[in-house]
Image (cartoon, rainbow, N blue to C red):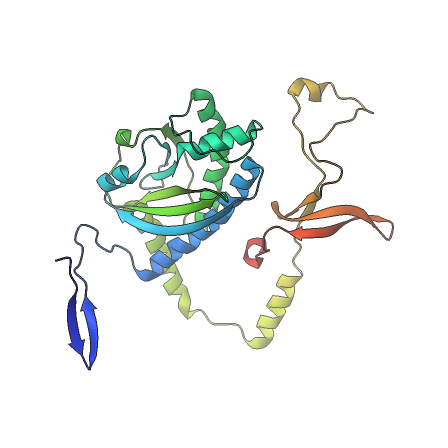
Length: 311
C-alpha cells in the first residue's frame, strides 16, 4: 500500500499514490491557498509582537499547514506546552494556539533584562509567568481576529489556558487543520501553531469562496475609470506617527503631575525614533527641522509598506 505504482501513458511514466483514508483531503487548493495567505498575514503580525516583546528583531514565517484527527492533534503537541483555547458562539469550534514553554520563558527573561538566547528551560509556567504571557497573548489573538476579518467576523468570548495536551477536550471530533509558524530567533528556531476545527474553516471559507465566485461576473471598470479610481486611491490620506518614546508610570504618579514636571522616556537621545504607518511600526528616523517646521528623516525601513494594509 505504501509503494507507488507506475502508470504508463503516451510514453510518460506517472506514479499513482495510494489515498490516505485516515487523512482525507477536505479542502480545495483554493481554500488551502487562502488559509496560507491568512497565516502569512498572521506571521507578519507575530513578528512585530515577538520583536517588541524580546527587544530584538525576529523573523516569523508560515512553515507548513498540516491536517490531523482530533486525537492525532493532541498527540502532536509537546508536553508540557503553553496552550490557549479560544471560544465563541460564532466560531463553530475552537481556535487553539500552542507555543513551546521554553520560548515563553525566554520572552519573560528578556523582559526582565536577561541577556542572550536560552531555550533550556522546558517546564510548566508559574502563575506569574502565565499572567505575563497572557498579556502578550491578547495582542496575538487580536492579530488572528484581524487576519480573519475579511473572511469571517467573530468575537472571542472566552480564553482558557492549559499546559497539558491530554487535558484538551474538544466540543466535536472534527478533523483539525494546524498552521505551523516558524519563529527564527537567529541562533535558535521554535514553532508556534494555530489550529482550527473543520467546522470553523468550512463555515468561514466556503462562504467566502462562494461569495467570491458570485462576484466573478461583476463588470470591470474601463481604462479611464480605472485610472481615475487609482488616482483617487493614491491621494487617500495615510496616518504617519513618529513616536518620541514611551515610559510606564503608576496611576499615583500620573495624578500628581503638574505643569513644569518632566517625564523621562526610555528612548535614548542618540537612537532613531519609531515611525508608525497606520499604527504599525514601519520605519526608523531622526528628528529635525525643514522650512521652520518639525520634520523627521527616514533612516531605516523596518518592514515593507504594503499598499493593501493602508487601504
